[in-house]
Amino acid sequence: MPAKPVLPPKAEVTFMNCQKFREVIDSYLGDELLVETNHEVFHHLENCAACRQELAARRALRQSVRLAVKSSPEMQIDHAFALRLRGELSELVLQPAIWNKLRSAPLFNFKLQAAAAVSILVISLLGGALLNRYRASDENAVVNNDQVNSPVIKRTSEELAMNQAVQVAWQEMAETAVGDHENCALEFRLAEKPISLDEAAKKYGTYNRDIEKVLISALQNKEQDNTIEAELLKAHFCVFAGRRFTHIVLRANGEIVSVLVTDSDLPAGEIQTGKQDGNLNVAGVNIGRFAIFAVSKLPDNENKTIVATVSPAIRKHIEQSS
Image (cartoon, rainbow, N blue to C red; front, side, top):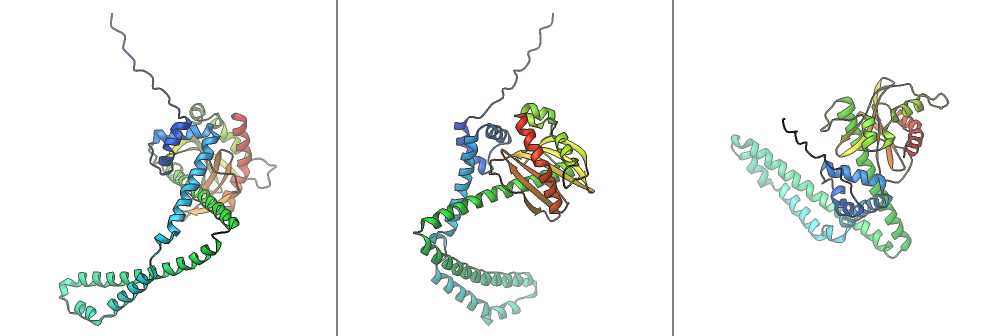
């Protein structure tokens, strides 16, 4: 009787805890983790409010440090050096001897002549730019020195840094949403094959099941002020640039539209719009632990209408599915 084949053991599903997350948080923010580790991070953030807050605080801290280093006195160019450099470069460019030597050089050195001329021009412009940068930083330093002892200004600066950090993170997420639209809805160039929403409901969150029906129902609701005629083309769950998306592809007003739902640790706010890659527009909003984007060639106001129409229904669906 032939021996029974030995089956390989099933792969164990690993879950990240808070301690492990804090060990990799900086690598996550620097986009240095493997795709598998990113998935563990996403799964942990879905279920841990404390780590979502820690991630937002760490992102704001990184942005504050970046701004502080950029504006620190040690990073500013010395005024005397800038003036001396600009004067020396100006004299160098205006010296007739240099241009005479270039004009009298052999014909076969024409490329060398052109390169030298361009180099001198670039050096001259660089000197002027350095001086202008110093002047601007010098003016800012005067303002900052007047404000250094004011607790109100200090608190305002911290809030500004936090807002800037949130805006940078939002912009990165919006760019990734646009990339998923381009590489999944318009042309398929994803490294990972998408999975069905039913499969995603088992692996990544039960809200994925029937979410496309909720979206279409919201768009076709006659009680809405702005009813949008939309045709459902496909719906799946995909990964682009390490970020997971519930991806619903529509046709509205003759254009392909991607409605994307993804994890988010950013605070809730108003719908934001923007232009990407010249001909694509994106609108998005944060709802609880998720962000919703609409990406298409439609005008900003139409993308914004889609997001405004579907986001309440999707939020309710996610809450009821949890």
